[in-house]
Image (cartoon, rainbow, N blue to C red; front, side):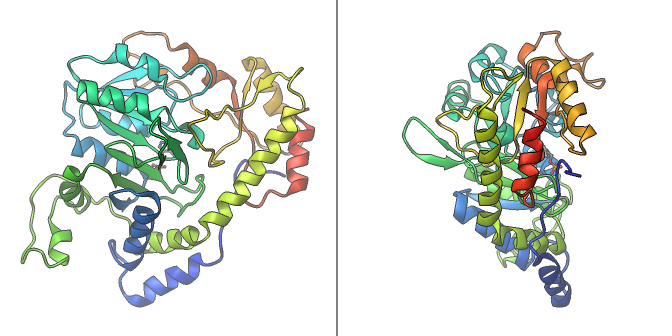
Length: 375
Ligand SMILES: *Cc1c(COP(=O)(O)O)cnc(C)c1O
């Protein structure tokens, strides 16, 4: 049996969890939390990182930080996970769904302009499969119209964007705010976990308050004030040290994990490319400005029948391939609130994408077996 995903364990997770337990500090914002946050800040040039209990929580923090209110419009791709939109809906925003590109499931940057109105407050982009959106175009719109940019970088750890200035920047370091996920289906994980990155300094102080239930407790513990209390809205967005200790073990193996995933991804690509002429699906496209962090290997099938056929054939041979998002603008929850625009590329990806198994422990034999049934 070849599952779709199998979370990888480095072996150090329980050792660090035990260390956290023995240290007597198991609530949030302790040694492991700070080690994880510093690691990401230094390696990827994020101004400030805060671990959260999920990417969904990090996105909710973004919506609070941007003071999203009823009447505000937020532009979100329709081809994404529910949380990308949900976090802003909870603050009362109207979601204006954007279509995907023709060549890639990411937001069609050239069609965002026509969605901007005087009520638009923010654009949320999703780096689908860890492949960058064209951030120069998005940031230009942000400057021109005075909009905030949030990167849903849930799938995008250790992936980069090279702008027209030639600088290579980590995904999640470009927008005003960004959110990562360490859910067990992501490249590095701690079961349930996430991270908010703050790149615009003016949000840093308030982000710590929102993170700590609306109190200025973080400042208090640094000795910057002599008592702490209730100063704003917020929630308990910080994870326990047990989750952070688990994540630290994964961070230590980040390079090894990435190398292995990239190897599997490249192998799939190499093999499947051999059938380019008569194939019933197309292979993923990585634009020149983007890197590939091997979060996912997907095929875009010619039609829904082909996809159903492929999933069935693989399943009959104990290989589990799965489709992905359904269009959010057509969801039960939002269809009546949507303005009725057709989003044809989004619908196409909803019907045609199939994701192949990709996990650390896949060996040559596994890869060859999946390939055998895709020929
Ligand atoms: C996984 C994922 C999320 C949600 O992450 P959680 O940590 O489970 O909240 C949000 N957006 C995208 C694009 C994702 O892939």
